[in-house]
Image 1 (cartoon, helix red, strand yellow):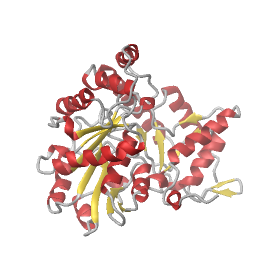
Image 2 (cartoon, one colour):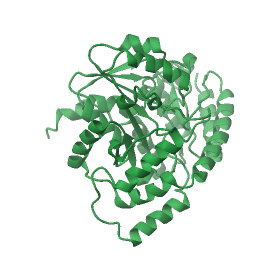
Image 3 (tube, rainbow, N blue to C red):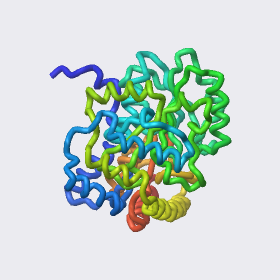
Image 4 (tube, rainbow, N blue to C red):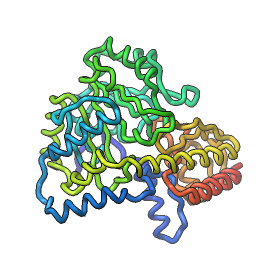
Length: 396
């Protein structure tokens, strides 16, 4: 059966692949600890669930406007003003079926064939694949453990060419947990001021899970704001992964382009999720803060446990709920007759031998690392790291 060559341009997300392999083992009766998926292990806060139930009772069950209900778009504006001191109008907002669709909409609306998109490493697995799907060219800027996985203005300047159309990054970052300070963003902003044609996607989905202090958005620089597309959503900060609700804040022309695409792909997103999202965005942030406090405790624990494993180096994440340790000391070691050549091999060894699901760093553009999620219970984190330590000690 001959399928489209489009499918050959991009890969299956490694995060979903590892989760699927873990589920397959679990279905066979194996006790697998999942440290691969970026999903909060909390339930959606009660006031948000009550809002959804109310929406069902009030018969919010019909097709929704493609760009989202007007009062939800207004709620996004209120949130951006309250949390980020950013002024937007509903015409700057479109809501979609998750932040992943928001990203896809924006990239497909902006990127043409052979346009270059600059992406600092490490990056979320979907960034590069969406660029390839749009027939653009990902251009990677390599960061490192020594730079806390952040790039410099000099690196950014050196990566820009006449074909550069877009810059795409996240802060807090998935997978490294790196968070850019206002000063660091200002350094990048100085470079962008020299290149007025470059647009900027700022993925801020982990905004509320920030251990470094106040979240800083590159959209705060007024002279750049019209070129910035903020991508955000409710999955991480409100434990609403299954509700599938994301949004962008951008120039009206970009919003209209995304609306045109979305009108053909999905139309408006789920009506009940939208009604609940209003109360999430402008309501009580107490549950979100409690989740962040729990993640803070888990971060401390997982860093302590990693420090007790020989040969592993790890930076302290300032945001999100991942650690991204360098594991190259284990490359070339053997599991019996099998040689673990890279992070891919190491992750499969940990899955099959330790029964712990992780994600290879090669999927994120950093092949010497693996990603571990601490969006899991303290018990599972402790047991998972104990299994990893034991499995690594068996290698020779």
